[in-house]
Length: 298
Image (cartoon, rainbow, N blue to C red):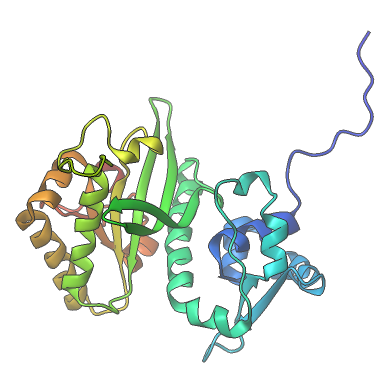
């Protein structure tokens, strides 16, 4: 005889839980971004109503973006981050809460731009039928690179290509540059990635390895070293082209970055191109040179 069961809870988390998880993970998001990420075909009220309920419970709050016709950027409070810390999807990814609207406003420009980059990949994945959702993007991933120093990537992306012919799990470190630092300083970030790629902790008194081998630290977290994608915005086409040229020069001239580039795909693209032509369009410039192509083909 069939076993009779009572009420079976839905495996799908309620929208309010998803909103809290997204804000705990991504730090900040506008109402429009949250809707695009979680309910792209729903009304604005579908998202704003649970956000306001979470706010009444002290779990989220918002800051108003300047010169924006009162656009709200939502964030987790300290209490919201404490609650979200127990979510299974956030294990190993400590949620971040804000202490005040002022603290949130200081992080707004860069944080919202990083999330805008994520949305370009999410939208493209939906269109293509690939797997890449709101929890497949972890901001501010940190790894040691030796000498007491750390690499902090703007984001780590997990993306699964699906087709009738293949299924491929891809990962990428994503750096988002808003043209707020010099092109030379941006290019120097590639040296940190080269250091992570080759970093093998050794006992004191022994020389460090400079070539990737079986003992490199990154193998603790990744079966294959993630590709490195640098997304640029905030400048004219000429300014951004110069920054890409600086990245290519660093790749060609620095021996450790050149070694990294022989093993790991490195590419740079303009955020507005990702949004207009999709990340799987021919919008990425390989840092080793060559024609622009999709990020999956670097």
